[in-house]
Length: 637
Image (cartoon, helix red, strand yellow):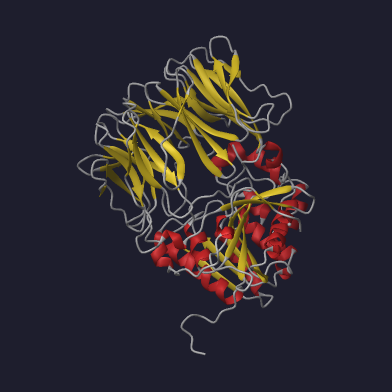
């Protein structure tokens, strides 16, 4: 499992900097309400005759389940929730019934629901504190696999449900804190993993016939990860993804009969996933290539790569191949529009756009493309980042800027559309999304550079990112702030505490303020990951608590002299509301300008459109007041 999801030198620009080659120009500014008229569509499972796909969309201001008609591209609402977000899972094979998942108020206790064609709904996993994950269908499509912690809140057991009666049956009882990775089609083999550290795990093969568990991971250096990609349709081979002996992950083909293995696919970036189509005609490989998705399609029998369709705008971020293997649903990603769905006919090569998610009220030419840049940090280490430059920025029209810090600590800022980023850039803020040391996507050596060094060298990477911004002739060097969510929120707080003269403002979105409390109060279903997490962050029950206390912003609030905005979800199970309550109270004692926005119906991430609008709107007002230092709009001089 990857890590928990929460620069004075010349730059090296690796991508063509489109915005720098164009003359500065003024663009139309849009309201946050206009930005959030843009639709977000996800999912995409084919129905029984492949005439429709099941998706989720937030066009109703909250996510609901829809059917997307492939012939006329119409969207028909299948659910009408106004309180909780519903996310499409799949059609029940051979029927028009479907499954969707939902939690309550962002508590992350997801349940799986069955909705029949007549509209009746059944909670298939109704435990009060149960969390359930859909794993797929049996080969004959009569049974569903899923994981659930209903028996023990700390661990996920493997279950199956026959669609004739939807009664749960346990397939694997997990008393050892292992994670189910994959199931063979004949149900004889179950691939299991165990987290050792956040950058190392072990992989096992459980034989349901012999009850023998065999260790598959053979890492001799103690620094590799392993994750199953799936079984061959005849269960002769297992494919898995590993970093064993390599800085980047690659695919291995493992023969179950004799344990022989061979490298199946590798490149100079991390391989994220692989899957084989319904009847084995194709296999798909997904790669994380310098903060952008790259998807490759292959003829499975020959291994020959098949050319993907050409796109006028954007790039392919994901695909779903229909059961007949004649159609492919594409998720097309763009920097200046939320993702769209396209249909590609694998036989006729016809490409058809199914959705247009960007609101017609916004001209995409007024938005900006992401640029992949690199800069040298304090110790000479090259740090990658994703950069957004306003169209109107110039040496005669200097603009304020933000250092943007991702969650994790092992997350990654990716190129692609981000509503809040485009909104802030449209209103005149440059944004540098730093992928500091410890970020994923750049090899395992880079990934583990922040272990038990959080808020130190990784934070210095952000400070040196600020220095890189200050070197750009169109940046107002006195107006650079820091913004982050989850772990990035901690980094934002640490930034204004440790470097009060570097950042003019700080924005903390559900950031960790007290590491000892956060590490002790992790959700129960993270138990299998607890030791690995403590190995990286430090164990709050040992002498590590001294360092954890020292880096915790809560114990350094007297140093907060920088204007601060804090945003928090009341139902957050990862970073508790008390973290933000206390950091706000502590900072206010200094007479520091502090603003606090609490969302009573959100968790670790804001899902409802009205809350996303309020979050972005309050942030821009704060930035305009304390960073750009404009008079409030509408105020008479």
